[in-house]
Image 1 (tube, rainbow, N blue to C red):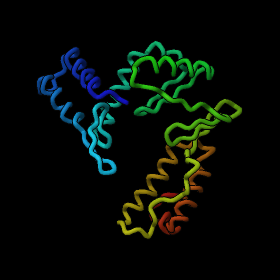
Image 2 (cartoon, rainbow, N blue to C red):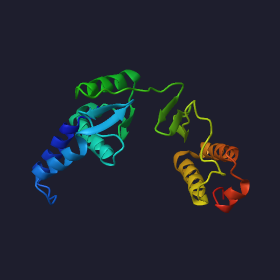
Image 3 (spheres, one colour):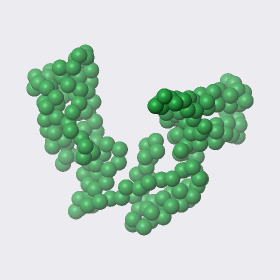
Length: 219
């Protein structure tokens, strides 16, 4: 759990130490951040609860606060992370490449010691394949990496049905986003197969061939 009050202290310390001009006193900033992050109430099965730590779920502020806390941890762990060949992070998802699985495990164990509230989990490469966010990475025999879409085993191909009661612009936007994302993620040796799978999936959701041509997706 990301510690809410600690994040506020980290933010305010950063403002004061760097003498940032934010337009309001730090004391006011503290009160505003506390107002946004504490006394969050919710109900479940007819009972009322109040969240006593962490950051609220579903608010635009929470990902920002989580990113700030992760950046703070990375600063503390700079020497540890130097042991990796590659370190990339998106929100709280981290991609690490090391010389061995033992080295990766050591890094994770050291990161777990940085804060009592934070525990990392790890998914290691299996059968030359590793998943990161919506990317499936496969290590080939020549050492290069092929990238394609990662789909969970529970994926059924279902998406917004073409005959749904929504504006056609939503459907065009869905198709554009899927195909543009595929072109952005996939390597050249995987792109044709991914575009074919996307078209088959959308066809299964009643999208007509003329729709693809009309939106110039496959051209």
